[in-house]
Length: 268
Picture 1: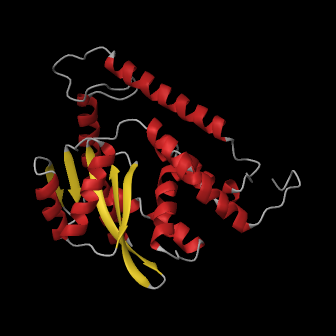
Picture 2: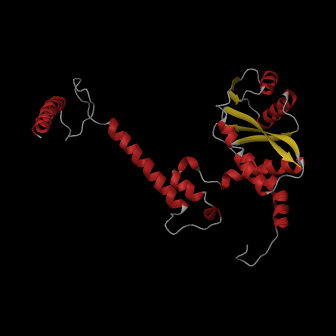
Picture 3: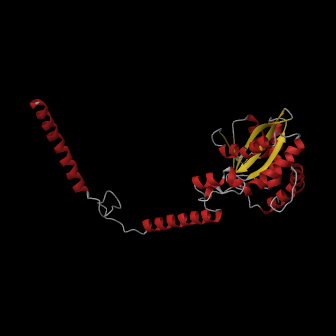
């Protein structure tokens, strides 16, 4: 908009996000595919005007945010309320539920989805814990939230819209992901040697095609006789008897070399 000569304030942009954000999030939720059958649930504290609140979040095994809810407690009643809200919006039950070792999850699990397998381990819930990072970044950029209602409305829309503007990590290499995630790339500034996003996607597709072709070539390779112990051997690689002969020759040379060194030291 600045290139077109239109100047807007931060308050105008905030008003646009408040007005159009929920509608965009609602349309994206309608078009979203069916969630996965493995759900990760976790809670994290946030401070709103100096008061500690708890942000409950649920994601599937692919990292897609299913629902969020801000509450003042994290006891069994709060966990049960979040689980019921989650099941009502999704309309289905998961096959596996992964949480940490908070006792409130066990209470909510018995009351809402007792037939679902429950895995509670602090090392299995990294998928949901990593989903809190964009929220922390926005909280730091906005210098905190001012009310529970505004935080709930903003995070509900932000969690649904923000993944569409983030680079697809599972389709990119580490180097391309760091280049795309740099501050200059977010602002539309790309280094001269950095390829564009379509070029990188094309390179990823080429690498995947080469990998599939290499796998097919290995599958179609001729089968070696049963007496071969080393599988597929390059043409220039010596056979097993030749390697054994070379090993024995090296072992024979070492004592001879040691004797020569001893005799030379004696003469000196």
